Length: 399
Ligand SMILES: Cc1ncc(COP(=O)(O)O)c(C=O)c1O
Image (tube, rainbow, N blue to C red):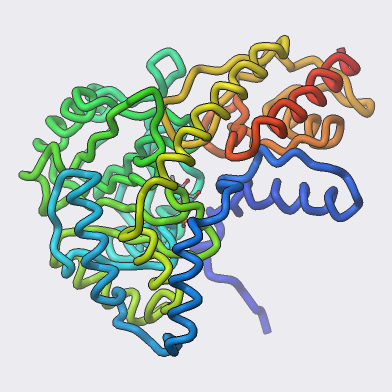
């Protein structure tokens, strides 16, 4: 008897972020005070009114299946939030509430991608995009971008990357891992290219509420109503409301696709957890001051982290427009010596920092940007300064 796994997993690699988190957790269990710059989640608690709403929902007996694509008031609230924040007005039958935004993307991958399809993804990319494409037997087509161009794909790059096989383009703005966000005119140039192509556009706007220095994040869906029949917006409560563990995200898609997603979800998770849907409803409909407070805290933390990066010889970083990551060029640290080894890659830098400074960060290679390190500033300024003090000491020891 030969017990085999499905071939579709052959080309898929596990999430490196989660692997680094696991190694950091091991160190923590051994008593090491690890500075967690690796995780992609806010250290804040969700707003108190969200937690209250969830408790009330439990007390009211919210413990049964819901409609597959989500409870009606939440879908309505998602439509109202889209009108308020993104400037377009979807209807509830376009909304699919999912178990986090990652699940919304996975549902889309199942509904859209198949062998022979190409999916255009600008690098650096969030690691799950190409892996989900590969899992479906389709082919990710990676478009390189540079720090010098602000980590943005140009219209010419996009035009060159598309072919008759292009099934979709995936755009993330602001981006994980770079924090780079496209301006309105940059998006308009990309949309002008897509207007001439016969493919889907999936826009991941999960960080759209977390932009700094007055940057205006504009939704592609608002800019190109004429492309509404082939555009999908993905969002969720994880980042904006510090609700990563509640696992609520959604997609807003044209109705025929939304119908297909209903079928996909109806045969997999059924519905996202009922109580979590009530918590997400409270997040979207409650006072939004907490979001503004978290946004300004993230901006101050970003600035604190950039200032600290500048104190480490061999590290440098561009100022990101949004999200909560500083994407630092660490090639200047190559050649450091530690434990009989020499730092020769971004992965070495990540393990050097974890072992020698107790600082967890994620290497850029798996994001499609070797030579870089993603450091999350979703942690207190005190922790940021503490972590960098350790980094400076470790680097000095290793020279
Ligand atoms: C760009 C991007 N999209 C989607 C997600 C998934 O978010 P969720 O927690 O809602 O699944 C993440 C989480 O790290 C992300 O960074």
